[in-house]
Image (tube, rainbow, N blue to C red; front, side, top):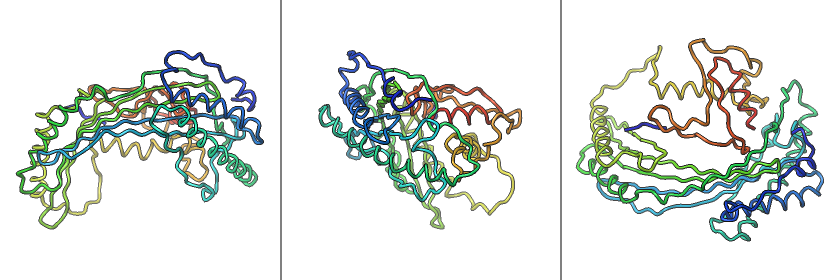
Length: 394
Protein backbone atom coordinates (compact mmCIF):
# COMPACT_ATOMS: atom_id res chain seq x y z
CA UNK A 1 0.00 0.00 0.00
CA UNK A 2 1.42 3.37 -0.90
CA UNK A 3 1.77 5.77 2.03
CA UNK A 4 1.11 9.43 1.49
CA UNK A 5 0.80 12.25 2.91
CA UNK A 6 5.65 46.62 -8.98
CA UNK A 7 7.14 49.34 -8.65
CA UNK A 8 4.06 50.91 -10.32
CA UNK A 9 1.45 53.47 -9.35
CA UNK A 10 -2.16 52.52 -8.99
CA UNK A 11 -3.05 53.96 -12.39
CA UNK A 12 -0.13 52.24 -14.06
CA UNK A 13 -1.17 48.87 -12.65
CA UNK A 14 -4.77 49.28 -13.77
CA UNK A 15 -3.70 50.47 -17.20
CA UNK A 16 -1.50 47.40 -17.61
CA UNK A 17 -4.40 45.04 -17.06
CA UNK A 18 -4.64 43.03 -20.29
CA UNK A 19 -7.81 42.59 -22.33
CA UNK A 20 -8.25 38.86 -22.73
CA UNK A 21 -9.92 37.31 -25.71
CA UNK A 22 -13.15 35.51 -24.96
CA UNK A 23 -12.00 32.06 -25.94
CA UNK A 24 -14.04 28.92 -25.54
CA UNK A 25 -12.40 28.08 -22.19
CA UNK A 26 -13.69 31.35 -20.71
CA UNK A 27 -17.13 31.35 -22.31
CA UNK A 28 -17.90 27.93 -20.82
CA UNK A 29 -16.79 29.04 -17.37
CA UNK A 30 -19.36 31.30 -15.65
CA UNK A 31 -17.20 31.69 -12.55
CA UNK A 32 -14.32 33.12 -14.56
CA UNK A 33 -16.66 35.34 -16.59
CA UNK A 34 -18.20 36.75 -13.40
CA UNK A 35 -14.80 37.33 -11.79
CA UNK A 36 -13.45 39.21 -14.80
CA UNK A 37 -16.57 41.37 -15.01
CA UNK A 38 -16.39 42.35 -11.34
CA UNK A 39 -12.65 42.96 -11.45
CA UNK A 40 -13.15 45.37 -14.35
CA UNK A 41 -15.98 47.04 -12.41
CA UNK A 42 -13.77 47.38 -9.32
CA UNK A 43 -10.94 48.94 -11.34
CA UNK A 44 -13.30 51.63 -12.61
CA UNK A 45 -15.35 52.24 -9.46
CA UNK A 46 -12.67 51.97 -6.77
CA UNK A 47 -9.99 53.58 -8.92
CA UNK A 48 -11.96 56.84 -8.70
CA UNK A 49 -11.91 56.83 -4.89
CA UNK A 50 -9.33 58.25 -2.50
CA UNK A 51 -7.38 56.28 -1.53
CA UNK A 52 -7.56 54.13 -4.65
CA UNK A 53 -6.35 50.53 -4.46
CA UNK A 54 -3.17 49.89 -6.41
CA UNK A 55 -3.77 46.13 -6.60
CA UNK A 56 -6.84 43.88 -6.64
CA UNK A 57 -6.88 40.10 -6.93
CA UNK A 58 -9.81 37.69 -6.85
CA UNK A 59 -9.62 34.04 -5.95
CA UNK A 60 -12.50 31.57 -6.02
CA UNK A 61 -12.17 28.04 -4.67
CA UNK A 62 -14.72 25.32 -5.35
CA UNK A 63 -14.56 21.97 -3.59
CA UNK A 64 -16.60 18.88 -4.42
CA UNK A 65 -16.42 16.00 -2.00
CA UNK A 66 -17.47 12.42 -1.31
CA UNK A 67 -17.13 10.91 2.16
CA UNK A 68 -17.91 7.19 2.54
CA UNK A 69 -17.76 5.73 6.05
CA UNK A 70 -18.13 2.07 6.95
CA UNK A 71 -18.73 0.75 10.45
CA UNK A 72 -18.84 -2.92 11.37
CA UNK A 73 -19.85 -4.00 7.87
CA UNK A 74 -22.42 -1.29 7.20
CA UNK A 75 -22.35 2.15 5.61
CA UNK A 76 -23.18 5.48 7.15
CA UNK A 77 -25.51 7.63 5.09
CA UNK A 78 -23.78 10.24 2.97
CA UNK A 79 -24.25 12.52 0.00
CA UNK A 80 -21.81 14.40 -2.25
CA UNK A 81 -20.91 17.89 -1.07
CA UNK A 82 -20.08 21.05 -2.98
CA UNK A 83 -19.19 24.57 -1.89
CA UNK A 84 -17.48 27.73 -3.19
CA UNK A 85 -15.61 30.57 -1.50
CA UNK A 86 -14.59 33.94 -2.95
CA UNK A 87 -11.72 36.00 -1.54
CA UNK A 88 -10.66 39.46 -2.68
CA UNK A 89 -7.18 40.81 -1.99
CA UNK A 90 -7.54 44.60 -2.16
CA UNK A 91 -4.43 46.65 -1.32
CA UNK A 92 -4.04 50.35 -0.65
CA UNK A 93 -0.65 52.07 -0.60
CA UNK A 94 2.22 50.93 -2.81
CA UNK A 95 4.12 47.72 -3.49
CA UNK A 96 6.85 48.78 -1.06
CA UNK A 97 4.41 49.46 1.80
CA UNK A 98 0.71 48.69 1.72
CA UNK A 99 -2.32 47.90 3.84
CA UNK A 100 -1.24 44.27 4.40
CA UNK A 101 1.99 45.27 6.17
CA UNK A 102 2.44 43.51 9.55
CA UNK A 103 1.59 45.64 12.57
CA UNK A 104 3.57 45.81 15.77
CA UNK A 105 0.39 45.96 17.87
CA UNK A 106 -1.49 42.78 16.93
CA UNK A 107 -4.48 43.86 19.04
CA UNK A 108 -5.44 46.05 16.06
CA UNK A 109 -6.02 42.98 13.96
CA UNK A 110 -9.70 42.09 13.57
CA UNK A 111 -9.09 38.36 13.14
CA UNK A 112 -11.82 38.10 10.49
CA UNK A 113 -11.48 35.07 8.24
CA UNK A 114 -10.93 36.14 4.62
CA UNK A 115 -13.51 35.35 2.02
CA UNK A 116 -17.19 34.50 1.94
CA UNK A 117 -19.41 31.82 0.50
CA UNK A 118 -20.28 32.07 -3.17
CA UNK A 119 -23.25 30.47 -4.91
CA UNK A 120 -22.48 27.14 -6.58
CA UNK A 121 -24.78 27.73 -9.56
CA UNK A 122 -24.07 29.25 -12.96
CA UNK A 123 -26.28 32.38 -12.77
CA UNK A 124 -23.95 35.26 -13.68
CA UNK A 125 -26.02 37.89 -11.86
CA UNK A 126 -25.94 35.91 -8.62
CA UNK A 127 -22.22 35.20 -8.94
CA UNK A 128 -21.34 38.82 -9.71
CA UNK A 129 -23.39 40.10 -6.78
CA UNK A 130 -21.54 37.81 -4.36
CA UNK A 131 -18.14 38.75 -5.78
CA UNK A 132 -18.85 42.48 -5.57
CA UNK A 133 -19.90 42.23 -1.92
CA UNK A 134 -16.55 40.64 -1.13
CA UNK A 135 -14.61 43.31 -3.05
CA UNK A 136 -16.45 46.15 -1.30
CA UNK A 137 -15.87 44.65 2.15
CA UNK A 138 -12.16 44.08 1.50
CA UNK A 139 -11.71 47.61 0.16
CA UNK A 140 -13.23 49.13 3.29
CA UNK A 141 -11.01 46.91 5.42
CA UNK A 142 -7.92 47.87 3.40
CA UNK A 143 -8.60 51.60 3.87
CA UNK A 144 -8.97 51.21 7.64
CA UNK A 145 -5.87 49.06 7.91
CA UNK A 146 -3.82 51.43 5.73
CA UNK A 147 -4.43 54.13 8.32
CA UNK A 148 -3.21 51.76 11.04
CA UNK A 149 -0.10 50.91 9.03
CA UNK A 150 0.74 54.58 8.55
CA UNK A 151 0.33 55.25 12.26
CA UNK A 152 2.45 52.21 13.09
CA UNK A 153 5.24 53.41 10.81
CA UNK A 154 5.52 56.66 12.73
CA UNK A 155 6.52 54.85 15.92
CA UNK A 156 8.22 51.79 14.44
CA UNK A 157 12.00 51.61 14.62
CA UNK A 158 14.63 49.20 13.32
CA UNK A 159 12.25 47.37 11.00
CA UNK A 160 13.58 45.26 8.16
CA UNK A 161 11.82 46.69 5.11
CA UNK A 162 10.98 44.60 2.07
CA UNK A 163 8.29 44.68 -0.58
CA UNK A 164 4.78 43.96 0.63
CA UNK A 165 4.00 42.94 -2.95
CA UNK A 166 7.05 41.76 -4.84
CA UNK A 167 7.13 42.31 -8.62
CA UNK A 168 6.03 39.31 -10.68
CA UNK A 169 5.60 38.62 -14.36
CA UNK A 170 1.94 38.08 -15.36
CA UNK A 171 1.02 34.46 -15.91
CA UNK A 172 -1.96 33.00 -17.80
CA UNK A 173 -2.86 29.31 -17.50
CA UNK A 174 -6.33 27.78 -17.86
CA UNK A 175 -6.31 24.14 -16.82
CA UNK A 176 -9.39 21.89 -16.71
CA UNK A 177 -11.75 22.12 -13.75
CA UNK A 178 -11.66 19.22 -11.30
CA UNK A 179 -14.64 16.86 -10.94
CA UNK A 180 -15.31 13.48 -9.35
CA UNK A 181 -17.16 11.98 -12.29
CA UNK A 182 -14.60 9.17 -12.59
CA UNK A 183 -14.77 8.19 -8.91
CA UNK A 184 -15.48 4.42 -8.47
CA UNK A 185 -18.03 5.00 -5.72
CA UNK A 186 -19.55 1.51 -5.82
CA UNK A 187 -16.12 -0.09 -5.41
CA UNK A 188 -15.31 2.21 -2.49
CA UNK A 189 -18.58 1.35 -0.77
CA UNK A 190 -17.84 -2.36 -1.08
CA UNK A 191 -14.30 -1.87 0.23
CA UNK A 192 -15.52 0.13 3.24
CA UNK A 193 -18.08 -2.56 4.09
CA UNK A 194 -15.55 -5.38 3.77
CA UNK A 195 -12.81 -3.75 5.81
CA UNK A 196 -15.07 -2.43 8.56
CA UNK A 197 -16.66 -5.87 9.01
CA UNK A 198 -13.34 -6.99 10.59
CA UNK A 199 -14.24 -5.08 13.74
CA UNK A 200 -17.82 -6.38 14.00
CA UNK A 201 -16.91 -9.39 16.17
CA UNK A 202 -14.01 -7.83 18.06
CA UNK A 203 -14.30 -7.92 21.85
CA UNK A 204 -11.89 -5.03 22.47
CA UNK A 205 -12.32 -2.53 19.64
CA UNK A 206 -14.36 0.62 20.25
CA UNK A 207 -15.62 3.17 17.71
CA UNK A 208 -13.92 1.69 14.63
CA UNK A 209 -14.46 3.04 11.17
CA UNK A 210 -13.17 2.79 7.62
CA UNK A 211 -13.42 6.03 5.66
CA UNK A 212 -12.83 6.71 1.98
CA UNK A 213 -12.87 10.37 1.01
CA UNK A 214 -12.51 12.15 -2.31
CA UNK A 215 -12.05 15.85 -2.92
CA UNK A 216 -11.89 17.76 -6.20
CA UNK A 217 -10.75 21.37 -5.91
CA UNK A 218 -10.85 24.02 -8.62
CA UNK A 219 -9.18 27.38 -8.06
CA UNK A 220 -9.65 30.51 -10.16
CA UNK A 221 -7.36 33.52 -9.76
CA UNK A 222 -7.22 36.85 -11.61
CA UNK A 223 -5.56 40.14 -10.70
CA UNK A 224 -4.98 43.65 -11.95
CA UNK A 225 -1.34 42.88 -12.69
CA UNK A 226 -2.37 40.42 -15.41
CA UNK A 227 -2.52 37.02 -13.76
CA UNK A 228 -5.26 34.69 -14.93
CA UNK A 229 -5.37 31.15 -13.64
CA UNK A 230 -7.63 28.16 -13.38
CA UNK A 231 -6.35 24.90 -11.99
CA UNK A 232 -7.92 21.72 -10.70
CA UNK A 233 -6.58 19.12 -8.31
CA UNK A 234 -7.89 15.92 -6.76
CA UNK A 235 -7.14 14.21 -3.47
CA UNK A 236 -8.21 10.76 -2.33
CA UNK A 237 -7.74 9.05 1.02
CA UNK A 238 -8.57 5.69 2.58
CA UNK A 239 -8.30 5.58 6.37
CA UNK A 240 -8.83 2.93 9.02
CA UNK A 241 -9.20 3.86 12.68
CA UNK A 242 -10.04 2.06 15.90
CA UNK A 243 -9.49 2.48 19.61
CA UNK A 244 -9.78 0.50 22.81
CA UNK A 245 -9.48 0.93 26.57
CA UNK A 246 -6.57 -0.35 28.60
CA UNK A 247 -7.22 -2.00 31.97
CA UNK A 248 -6.54 1.30 33.74
CA UNK A 249 -9.04 3.18 31.53
CA UNK A 250 -6.48 4.75 29.20
CA UNK A 251 -7.74 5.23 25.64
CA UNK A 252 -5.50 3.58 23.07
CA UNK A 253 -6.08 4.61 19.44
CA UNK A 254 -4.52 3.48 16.17
CA UNK A 255 -5.06 5.19 12.82
CA UNK A 256 -3.62 4.49 9.40
CA UNK A 257 -4.25 6.13 6.03
CA UNK A 258 -3.24 6.00 2.40
CA UNK A 259 -3.37 9.05 0.12
CA UNK A 260 -3.45 9.17 -3.66
CA UNK A 261 -3.90 11.67 -6.46
CA UNK A 262 -5.59 8.97 -8.55
CA UNK A 263 -9.07 7.63 -7.72
CA UNK A 264 -7.84 4.15 -8.64
CA UNK A 265 -4.69 4.51 -6.55
CA UNK A 266 -6.32 3.69 -3.22
CA UNK A 267 -6.05 0.20 -1.72
CA UNK A 268 -8.79 -2.25 -2.70
CA UNK A 269 -11.10 -4.06 -0.31
CA UNK A 270 -8.61 -6.88 0.32
CA UNK A 271 -5.80 -4.47 1.23
CA UNK A 272 -8.07 -2.40 3.48
CA UNK A 273 -9.25 -5.55 5.22
CA UNK A 274 -5.64 -6.54 5.88
CA UNK A 275 -4.97 -3.09 7.27
CA UNK A 276 -7.98 -3.35 9.58
CA UNK A 277 -6.78 -6.72 10.89
CA UNK A 278 -3.30 -5.28 11.50
CA UNK A 279 -4.81 -2.40 13.49
CA UNK A 280 -6.87 -4.80 15.61
CA UNK A 281 -3.75 -6.88 16.30
CA UNK A 282 -1.82 -3.76 17.28
CA UNK A 283 -4.54 -2.76 19.72
CA UNK A 284 -4.24 -6.19 21.39
CA UNK A 285 -0.48 -5.64 21.75
CA UNK A 286 -0.93 -2.14 23.13
CA UNK A 287 -3.40 -3.33 25.75
CA UNK A 288 -0.91 -5.95 26.91
CA UNK A 289 2.11 -3.65 26.87
CA UNK A 290 3.45 -2.38 30.22
CA UNK A 291 3.19 1.29 31.11
CA UNK A 292 6.15 3.38 29.97
CA UNK A 293 7.88 5.05 32.88
CA UNK A 294 8.77 8.77 32.59
CA UNK A 295 12.00 9.20 30.64
CA UNK A 296 14.51 11.99 30.19
CA UNK A 297 17.23 11.56 27.60
CA UNK A 298 17.97 11.35 23.90
CA UNK A 299 15.30 10.12 21.50
CA UNK A 300 15.42 8.69 17.99
CA UNK A 301 12.49 9.86 15.90
CA UNK A 302 10.95 7.84 13.08
CA UNK A 303 10.99 9.24 9.56
CA UNK A 304 7.54 10.85 9.63
CA UNK A 305 7.96 12.20 13.19
CA UNK A 306 11.44 13.52 12.35
CA UNK A 307 10.04 15.36 9.34
CA UNK A 308 7.32 17.05 11.40
CA UNK A 309 9.83 17.97 14.12
CA UNK A 310 12.23 19.51 11.59
CA UNK A 311 9.35 21.37 9.95
CA UNK A 312 8.38 22.93 13.27
CA UNK A 313 11.85 23.99 14.40
CA UNK A 314 13.15 25.15 11.01
CA UNK A 315 10.46 25.36 8.36
CA UNK A 316 8.22 27.92 10.03
CA UNK A 317 11.14 30.13 11.00
CA UNK A 318 12.27 30.70 7.42
CA UNK A 319 8.84 31.60 6.08
CA UNK A 320 8.93 35.04 4.52
CA UNK A 321 5.88 36.48 6.30
CA UNK A 322 7.30 35.45 9.69
CA UNK A 323 10.61 37.13 8.95
CA UNK A 324 8.71 40.37 8.28
CA UNK A 325 6.69 40.29 11.51
CA UNK A 326 8.58 42.28 14.15
CA UNK A 327 6.75 40.49 16.96
CA UNK A 328 7.89 37.09 15.68
CA UNK A 329 11.18 35.45 16.54
CA UNK A 330 12.86 36.39 13.21
CA UNK A 331 15.49 33.80 14.08
CA UNK A 332 17.15 33.74 10.67
CA UNK A 333 16.48 37.31 9.55
CA UNK A 334 20.16 38.29 9.63
CA UNK A 335 21.42 34.92 8.42
CA UNK A 336 20.17 34.84 4.83
CA UNK A 337 23.02 33.47 2.74
CA UNK A 338 24.80 31.97 5.75
CA UNK A 339 25.18 28.28 6.52
CA UNK A 340 22.95 27.30 9.42
CA UNK A 341 22.89 23.52 9.00
CA UNK A 342 25.63 20.90 9.02
CA UNK A 343 27.00 20.14 5.57
CA UNK A 344 25.42 16.69 5.57
CA UNK A 345 21.90 18.17 5.83
CA UNK A 346 20.12 19.87 2.97
CA UNK A 347 16.70 21.42 2.49
CA UNK A 348 14.77 21.52 -0.77
CA UNK A 349 11.57 23.54 -1.18
CA UNK A 350 9.81 22.31 -4.31
CA UNK A 351 6.03 22.96 -4.48
CA UNK A 352 5.95 21.49 -8.00
CA UNK A 353 6.94 18.01 -6.78
CA UNK A 354 3.88 15.76 -7.10
CA UNK A 355 5.49 12.40 -6.33
CA UNK A 356 8.43 11.11 -4.33
CA UNK A 357 9.28 7.54 -5.30
CA UNK A 358 5.87 5.79 -5.17
CA UNK A 359 4.33 8.31 -2.77
CA UNK A 360 1.81 10.92 -3.92
CA UNK A 361 2.57 14.20 -2.15
CA UNK A 362 -0.08 16.56 -0.84
CA UNK A 363 0.47 20.29 -1.18
CA UNK A 364 1.85 20.25 -4.72
CA UNK A 365 0.67 23.18 -6.83
CA UNK A 366 1.14 24.72 -10.25
CA UNK A 367 0.76 28.29 -8.96
CA UNK A 368 1.37 30.42 -5.90
CA UNK A 369 -1.28 32.37 -4.01
CA UNK A 370 -0.55 35.27 -6.39
CA UNK A 371 -1.15 33.19 -9.48
CA UNK A 372 2.54 32.90 -10.37
CA UNK A 373 4.22 29.66 -11.46
CA UNK A 374 6.10 28.32 -8.42
CA UNK A 375 9.80 27.68 -8.54
CA UNK A 376 11.81 25.04 -6.77
CA UNK A 377 14.56 26.18 -4.42
CA UNK A 378 17.74 24.14 -4.88
CA UNK A 379 18.97 21.85 -2.15
CA UNK A 380 20.98 23.99 0.18
CA UNK A 381 22.46 24.07 3.65
CA UNK A 382 21.63 27.75 4.01
CA UNK A 383 18.55 29.68 4.97
CA UNK A 384 18.87 31.76 1.83
CA UNK A 385 16.88 29.71 -0.71
CA UNK A 386 13.80 29.05 1.33
CA UNK A 387 13.57 32.33 3.20
CA UNK A 388 13.89 34.47 0.09
CA UNK A 389 11.63 32.34 -2.08
CA UNK A 390 8.80 32.34 0.44
CA UNK A 391 9.06 36.10 0.82
CA UNK A 392 8.96 36.56 -2.96
CA UNK A 393 5.83 34.44 -3.27
CA UNK A 394 3.90 37.00 -1.29
